[in-house]
Length: 389
Length: 206
Image (cartoon, rainbow over all chains, first blue to last red; front, side, top):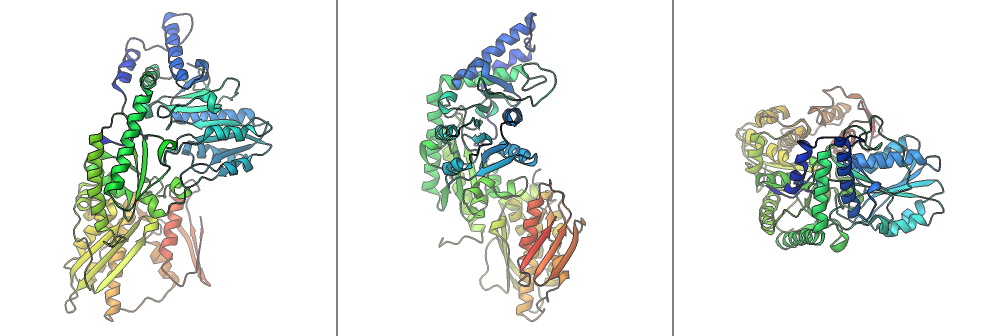
């Protein structure tokens, strides 16, 4: 299998799996106090928190493990807004954000909060002028997706922070960094991030574990109620094995960050270069270069539909994703592509490749070779295409 | 959810792909905006009214291409009367079934075939153009598939009211506000009713 859909989930690193095993066997304990089984687990947990916090220049006490990136988003958004609703009831998000953020915005809108949805330009950068204009005296919360999950666009968080700070009251910034974390450097202090969600399974860690960064001094209300095994954010039992695997995955990336991110960028650049050289009538969605997350290449192929491309590539054991309505849950054109001014056809014909350090140049060569054949064949079948195109 | 082997076979190696020179009947249905469009060309024996040649082209997903392939296979060698009677469920069954969410592809393929035959009939004085009526709106709504179950919205009794007055078609559909396919059903209704020049506006209440 040539796996080019690492934004969906990624292959766990063998080292991460290895690191999990003791916690599934002899060290199966939950953290606790006074007795060895609990205190040892607690020490290990603190070690894992430290690995994650170091990777984003935070303190280990600011890291809270969760059951997923989505859970971290829910705890951050619902927790912050509920704890700060007495200060104001206005929230800002952009129309191209990750579904977790938009679904939470809709939840608060239905609960009587007001939400401003700011637009983005053709490359997926949110409109900073609109952001400035959107700020009100009762704005308490801004949230965005650091590396856009469809176009890879990296939002200028530093500039956004400056705009938020121009208000005469505190506006918290929550960042969904599940796509960007481990692929671009993130320094929560330099970027002025208050809350941030990350996920293990997108960076070669195990599925079922994420983390929330919560800046010291930022108060959030309790979202999940019940027994506390680690803290009051993600209540209930949580997998120490998964946390150990997550930590190992981060350790590997931190130790080889420049090498890994350069390799992924080289692979992506090669993929883009080869597609543009070998296939006509294509369009890159999202920006070129450094302002794009290194693992993401999203291309629209004119005259043909994306689900057909993905099913045909699957026949050759090549896994990619599409923005086509035909492959979506509600049979709708991709909301990000539409918000960025693409036509329905460009959305339906878009293919998203998300690469990892485990991909090879040889895999890219095979993918482009098959893709060129598939595009040619599907265009031959398409009533929208003729040779003169 | 996955495609049957037969769908995959017809998708990977579709039959009758292409266009015909000087076809006797031709139709193009669907739209790129909705993600699927099918064209069918036919050549019909004037004496026997048998479809002797048939080709299709498809802009769409794997099942759209597979249904184009199967419908042209099923129609080839049949009289136009026989071919008109091929239903979308029959075409889907011929492919060993389609996922409910893809059933609209079969409806589109059947509709395109029937319209290509209609085109032939009109050109040869075998039929008259349909006179627009409210019943035609209902017939058209029978082509709108509720993707959750793969049945049309009329058979499922989701259509509560159909009205037509002064160029405005009023359609009342029973579908919950949280339904994943709500927007899709509305878009499909609009797309299907677009073809009637008599309808200037479609008002859908849900």
